Length: 79
Image (cartoon, rainbow, N blue to C red; front, side, top):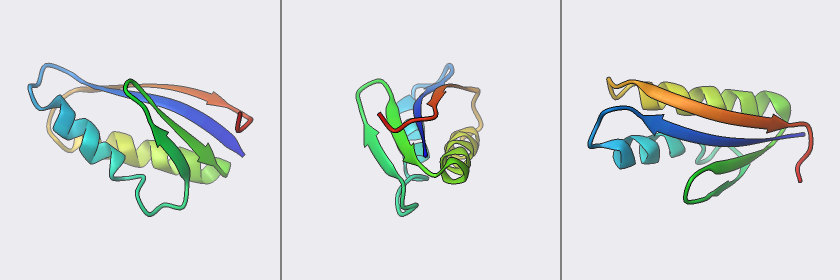
């Protein structure tokens, strides 16, 4: 089990809320435990599932044709 704290930053766009919300939809139905906060989202689960979720979030955000920065902190615990 691992935990990731992730923040997405769409660059130079007035649609940042839409892009962030779209990327969070990648987590829905994935079976992962996640908690959306005001500045970041905490994801917990099996290692392969968490890495796949992070990639899906990033790819979904990038599909909006804008530059995106993603900051992730990963820990090998669920605390």
